[in-house]
Amino acid sequence: MKRVAAVAVFFAFLGTAVWGEVAFRLPERWAKGVAISPEGSVFAVTTVNGVYLFRFEEVVEPGAEDPLAGGLKLGLPGYVHGVDFSPDGRLVAAGGWSMARVWDVFRGEEAASIGVRGFVYALSFTPEGNLLLGLSSGDVILYDIEKHEVVWERKLHSGAVWGVAASPDGKLAASGGAEEGVLFRLADAEVLFEFPGHAWDVGFTPDGYLLGIGAGKVFEIYDTTTGFPYFSAQRHHGCIWGVSFSPDGKHAATASLDGTVILWDVERGKDLRVLGEGTESMEDVDLDEKYLVACRKDGTVYIWNLQELLEGDVG
Image 1: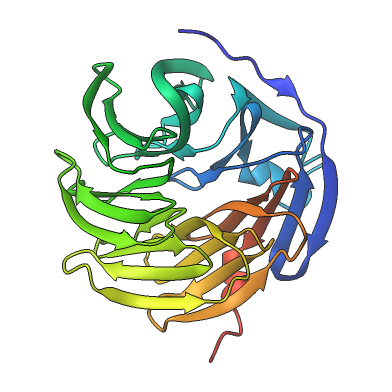
Image 2: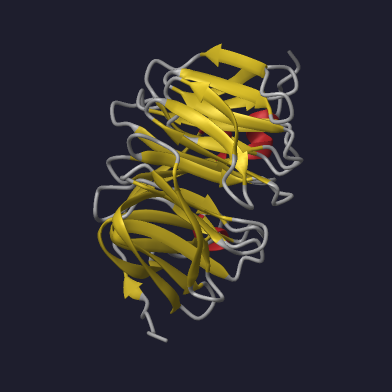
């Protein structure tokens, strides 16, 4: 296995703001994807020629002498888009032109390199630890990392696949493209429902009953059993690039071309906070029990304290 060394990282620290916000800018001035590890200690950000891994305690905890002084960069040539952690938090994967790479999080070693035809715009681990890959060709691939082989490959979209996700029970999966969102069986890619219109990103609630879609400027949630709409709202003024649900399924976050992140109350079907207003697009977002992390196209990374965001919400 190839050993990937830690590198020195120099940041523009943008300070703190309301609701426990921490913001800093990557040296590449470009960021496309973010993901929080399952145990919540580490987060990843994609950029040019690689992926940065950061520990939350080194970035957000008070009293740190130099909270932005270090990070581990894992190399991948060119612009890197999708990123995700394995269910056990041991591996992190990212995709770019003609390949996806998988690394051991704790040792910084490459665990697998997957060659593909086209650009990997989106990827997601399944509960079993396999990888779903969404390609520029419109194909979706299920890849077995342990066996180093393709389980199946299907052309589910006429254009690029911008989002993929697997349900937590491993039975369903979804993908999104410019023309539609697709819900299908993970085992064999049999299509169950199609959702016409833009679908720039997709994500499941932890119980797998609901599927969230960034449908142009509209945040839509569907029932995965019936395919019927559960919730639909337009609060963004630009296309929604990123969709993520909290581990308890009560909240969601969306990142948009309009430069903002919106925090949603899923059960009540309402928006709670508009965050990070700016001119550059917000490219992706993820959240867990403690933090909400997002990245802007100009390389700015934002971290918000989720509980502080929720405090005072009594509407």
